[in-house]
Amino acid sequence: MSSLKCCVVKLAGIPSYQLKQLQSAVTSVIIGQFNRLPHTYLEAAHHKFQRRLLGITRRDKVRNEDIRKKTGSRKLEDIIKERRLRWLGHVLRMDNSRTARQATHWELRGYKRKPGQSRKNWVDVIKRDLRQMDLTWEEAEELANDKAEWRRRVAQCSHLDAG
Image (cartoon, rainbow, N blue to C red):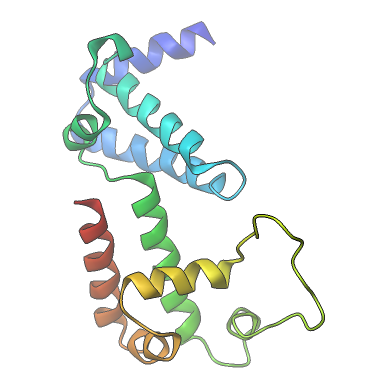
């Protein structure tokens, strides 16, 4: 493990195109865990990774926003929101006979969530994202048919959140 840490610290001098490739690979792994772990843990892991790539320690007292500017990355939450909305566009363009498309309309009859903090499912999270974009579900279904416009709106939404 110590050799891995040494290797990661030496990466601070690598070219920017290799840095982008490495970041995208690690970001994909972190995103895979996004629904299992609290978001703050994953944001912290993402920032720790970026600090190591730049050779910055916590003792240097560099803000996370400054590190994101140096690496050219966005908040992990914004990246995941964009990918979630892009996937929604893909699903909404599918034929109604496809299982993924049908799953957006499934409701469990007679099922009630347990008391306490309710767990959100994918559709609940998507509806929240759509509200932030000032869209209803029906408007999103229409807009998603125009792939270029959907991607533009999703990118615009995620970049507004980032900055």
